[in-house]
Length: 341
Image 1 (cartoon, rainbow, N blue to C red):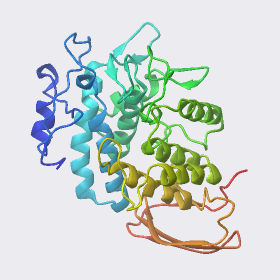
Image 2: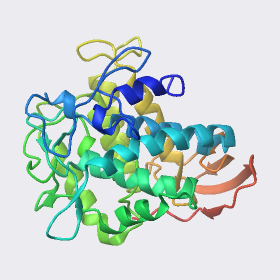
Image 3: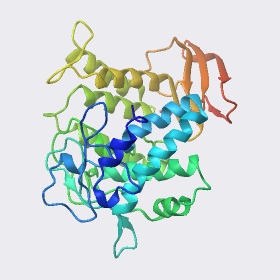
Image 4: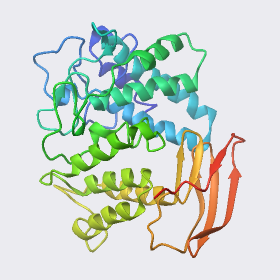
């Protein structure tokens, strides 16, 4: 659908940027036609949903994972064209301020009330990830120096004493279902637990997010569980998953909020995978976040980025057997001692 919808993705962009940029608004039909109205200077007629800029780039993160789990060059080539267009929109609207840093204009952080802000963390995360990924895909591209310049000079994520903010103009100070302001932690892993200098920021931001209770839903608990899993805290992760199952999942295993919501059960399934197997910055982590009471576990042929099929057995709290099959001949680092107390 993403490949077939490229014409609509172009039409979703204001005419001034349509020569090189692609975008996707909040919701639309199968043809992907849903315009956005983000300019270098804020459009006074734009609604919050009109300013939701990062959606295409976030969709393309999962396209990227599909490529990475298969290492299929046919997918890589199609992905590169779409991602380049998505990142071009950010390049078209960014501006350099007196601090010498690149900044983003007013955009909207999904679902947060009054979440229109400059230097929105949702967009900074996706812009940074997009430039990093384009350099990985095509390091010799003519725009590679521009992408590297963004990585070197993009403004840091807005934060305060409570952790990561919604953006430059909006603190995080009310309950919020979504972790849109924390995408740099999960799923993008731009800020991660393997970076000791960022651990306190991750902890504070997660605890502050869940410190406001009113708007939390099942998706909030899948996100919290996933971040705790990335912190190697399996007991906290399974506690959050159990709250999801006990409070939100129905007796027939289905889930609903205002209506059926498929993203939450799928996010829960992915979070369960992160208890057993993770892949961060080229390193496979085996059993990184098992709860203490799970002494006997096994899995068979779970895939990671790089197209590796991994199987393993753990008995009485000790790893007994591991098999890694390379499906595409990629290089691999392996870490089976990553659990930290």
